[in-house]
Image 1 (cartoon, rainbow, N blue to C red):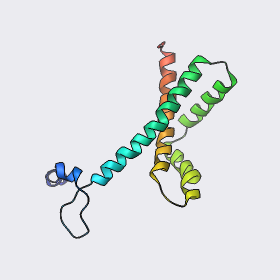
Image 2: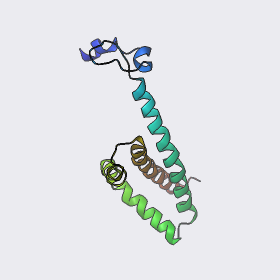
Image 3: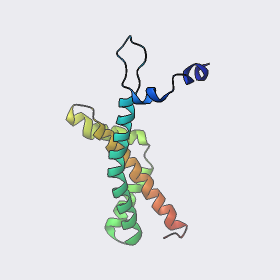
Length: 130
C-alpha cells in the first residue's frame, strides 16, 4: 500500500523543488539532496587523501615506528562502530562549537572513509596486489 500510494509522488519536482510551507501541498526536498551532496563532498575531500596517504605509507614503510602507530590507529578504528565515531566527533566538534554543523558530520564520515581505505589497502596487500 505504501509503495503503491507513494510512488506517484516520486517525480522530478519532488527532488528539485524546495519544501512547501506547513499546511500547503506539494513541495520537494531539494535542500536535503544538496545538503547530502555537500556533506559527502566534504567527507570525501577529507577522507580520501588521508586514507590513501595512510595506506600507502603503511605499505611502503611497514617496519617504521610511525607506520606501526598508523596501523594500530586504523585497527582500533576498525574495531569501533561508526556510531561511536559519531559520538566522538560530537563530543570533540559539536559540543565546543555549541551548534550542529555539516562539517562535524563530514569529519565523522571522513573517519569512516579512512577506516575503509586502510582496510582495503591491507586486503590488497595481503592478496598480493600492488
